[in-house]
Image (cartoon, rainbow, N blue to C red):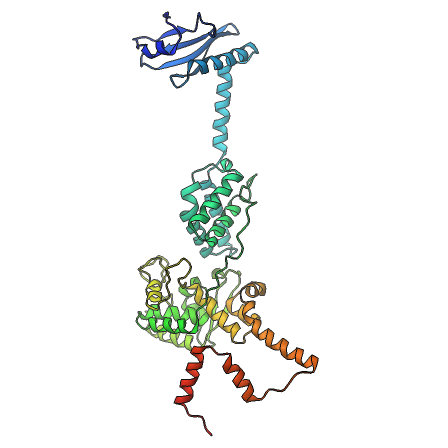
Length: 441
């Protein structure tokens, strides 16, 4: 039965529950709204509802709970519902349709995690057809798990706005390097590429993020000395990285079937190359000596040149942290710094041999072939600046001939000039060699 109480906050707060629900109508006040009631449930919960005839039938519309909803707010909502009913709209039917629309939208929408899963599925099919490499997918998983999934993996795709995308990329750069930021951006752009709206498409990569660290001659010397204390397999794999200039993924997974011992060639298959075509690497005497020795010591039927029983791949891998062989070697060689980016990485070995090749007179074309780049412009963008002194020297000679000021340089003068261009370390080495090996008169 309905009970007579004053429709105010103080009264509502003192209301007690009863075995059966009862209602309090909003009456006898200037602000009262006809049809608005407070329904007190046996559980003690108090609901604002609006009751009115609609097409000859009683319609009760739930507005909300007291005290989460105030009396003033309930009256405003009741007035809006009264207008809808007067215009022939059933509020309950409208609510039902809205819930169904939301449910349908949720069923059709996908999360960022599901979008990533679809991206991986497509990527995997391209690996099978030879269009992409497994190493690239491994890198994708690493970037996703470390930097993207924990933050936005649970979100719905359509919920991410351009502003959200901007803020997320800014968050990445505050805690990681510019290179990691660019990798995250590249992955997200690719994932959202087929969506109606790609919130990441307007964001640009940061320029100047290429690493240019190469080892100086004295650093290479320290590295070689540090290798002497390592197990043969780690010493050999680092030497092979340094002697061939190839990517660590290729060297770590080097297989005996890829080695042509007779011609001294390492043929890296398409499946391991970024350029999606096989790459022939000429092997020097030093590299062949390592392979010959390892071949003699390898177990019968062994597939990999650098095998490992502890890794799932079957070959050695680079592990992060102090327990890794690379951390141990570089620490012993004093090639680890306190600042971010100072530590020498394995990829720096590849950059070192390429840079030394250019600086000592090699041309960009040869270096590009060694590195297995798909386009010489890729090599040139990284290493062409190292060739500038050779270009300057040739330009100087040409200019002198053109202006008629060229003077023939004797062998002695040329030697003196070249000695003057040596570093102090190189000058000391030359001095020691001259003292140990007397020149003939």
